[in-house]
Image (tube, rainbow, N blue to C red; front, top):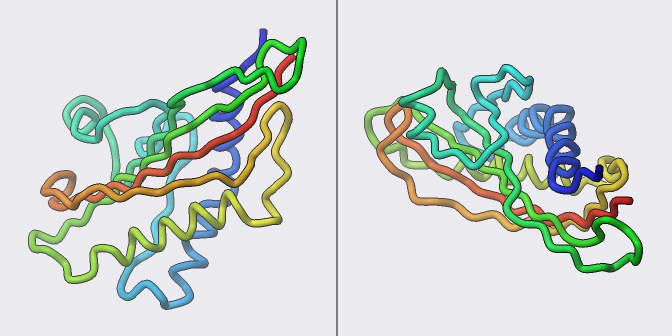
Amino acid sequence: MSLISKSVRAAVATRLSSAFNASLASAIATGSYGSAAAFTVDWSDNSKQFFQGQLHPDDLDESTPSIYPMVMLYSTSSQNQNTQKYTAFSGVVSLGLDFHLSWKSAKVLPAFDDLVDAVEDAVFATLNAASYQNWAMPVIYNGDITSQRRPLDMAGEHWRQTISFRLVFEVVTN
């Protein structure tokens, strides 16, 4: 049986767990992100921060022990394009990656975007750096990332902002 979306999610989860925390710490250490403080994500299977599924953080806050920042990795679509004949699947798989960041301050901070900027830069560095381009078959990464920020809202630990990434991969399975 071929693993289509699951193989891509597993490859991305492995890459994030091996490089994201260091990429974020390195970005923050440059001093370019104001007073933003680095954080680490527990990428383990029993994590209270990392979930594989398209979940809303409010639902987790009400139902599941969880810790901010929360990260969601999930499949959004797969399209068999028959780019290679006589394979079970040869096409494109898209993933979503959401970072839900929260601040404990009861009032609006003047530079909420600094931490979101650092997370954005760390995700791009983690996935697009030349040193990280050894993806395991059947996953072929083409560097296609789009990021989008959601509005800041009163939620989470007082304030929450989400930055969402859409990642596109090619997959060829037998």
